[in-house]
Image (cartoon, rainbow over all chains, first blue to last red; front, side, top):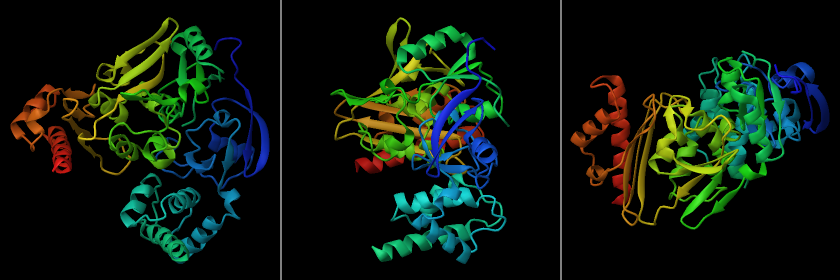
Length: 164
Length: 273
């Protein structure tokens, strides 16, 4: 390794509304930083190459893979994890709906599923079942067969359409 | 499944980024959204000594109308194209293609320039930009040059870029109001790498009739004269094009590319009707 190049980097960000300033090795993923430094273990690590979706969090309001995002690359960012969605109204509707529709079993995929589901509900209020399934392609569940998850999201979409 | 050790720099200007790349030799690599590099770092297929993060560079965030074309800065995300947050010179083709790239969470961070520089043979932009005859603009220590997208990818994960050159953006010519297109991407599940990409664009006003046989494990194959397909699918012309693309004479691989091309052509013909 060349001299003078930084192997430890200081960075600052907001996590679930609270300011955080830390020093990490640049190779640290955002997922590992959240789980092992901040003890926010709601974010799960599955495939670690961006395919399974278990690690999905919000970066500046948009879903992102925390396993293939470097923590240092989030300098200045607003990061929100599943722990930071307790008071989010759409996330609250989805939690109820996931329970009612049996949209989880082991629960490993669920934090990522909820982040993605919330994005579908907010971004695509008129989504139908094929569109929900397309949007869910990046979140793998090995328990449910997806039927309950799709139903849970469609239920919240329908509730919100009824309310508007 | 954890990335190897590397140093990290976040330069404040394009010139500083080029200097870091030039000084780092083969051990220095750019990172923008990290959606291609991230996985291969975690697999340790890539083991750079230094990552130069260009995601925040204002020079790469520019999107501008240049009259006959739209210039997309290299750090334009797939999601920005999908959502129409940037102009579309292609009558809906770029947003439709963007929606098929990986997953929304990846599209939110992955960038146009990053995908092109990575040059995966199955990548959407490397293929579709070749079809559209777009120009890739790159900046190096000695200045700027424009590279035709169809001549940009040399082979799997290999481009004509020098080690100290940075893609600053892509110029995509505007299609006319009479232009039609078709695009079909074959993958087993939405968001996976394509097994085949077929596409065609026809713009009578600009004299464009080009087709693409993409995701062939090598550089994209552009059919420069797609006129045989403009009134419907021509099986004989398709066989000639598939041979020219270097596909095996028979079997699954040839068949999926044939079907992808056919479905793209049918879509384009229907749009013209």
